[in-house]
Amino acid sequence: GAVVSQHPSRVICKSGTSVKIECRSLDFQATTMFWYRQFPKQSLMLMATSNEGSKATYEQGVEKDKFLINHASLTLSTLTVTSAHPEDSSFYICSASAGTGRAFFGQGTRLTVV
Amino acid sequence: AQSVTQLGSHVSVSEGALVLLRCNYSSSVPPYLFWYVQYPNQGLQLLLKYTTGATLVKGINGFEAEFKKSETSFHLTKPSAHMSDAAEYFCAVRHSYGGSQGNLIFGKGTKLSVKP
Image (cartoon, rainbow over all chains, first blue to last red; front, side):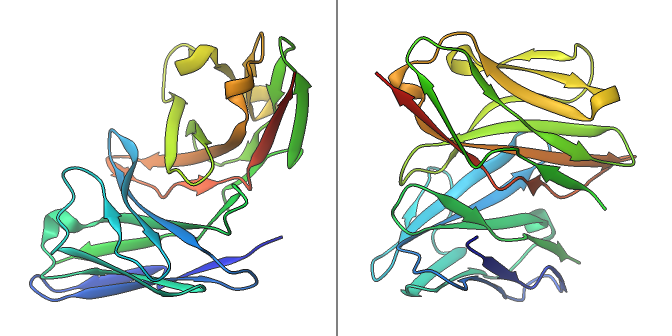
């Protein structure tokens, strides 16, 4: 089956620094990638949808300048949390789709901002 | 280690027929369980979730799921399939350790097709 690799699985960073999370489709071309964030009582929230070669579409309430998403190739999308603060600590997960309708999830990244 | 198994990557039913999507989990602590639906080229939508309390959980679009601890299962059902139910469905598990929150772990998904 299709494999999506998300890296790193865990990261601890200092407040004010930036963190980059990578999401790679290893054996298929991902035309669309989704980025989610896990909130305590709301389970999973869609942050943005990115299509290769175009700007990401952000959901309402998600700060574009804080959560930078780049989908420069058909196998890689990155999420950069800029000027991270403790409230950004969360579990971030990506999923990738080849356009067939099926989506495959990365393993997720646990971000802790101290 | 926690894991989620969805039996059947593809399920096909006729319109009006019962929908049954299977999900089994492994867990050493009481889990929180979720079902999500994803339509083509859209993000996940939460169908329903079980945290505590009543083991039969009702969700949106007529779906429901029952948490069976003895069987470590959380199967998703709907009495009568509709064409608009055709989508991919994901089961997920999360654990709560005291006050902290574990990561969501997803099954591989089941694609539901509905025949007219």
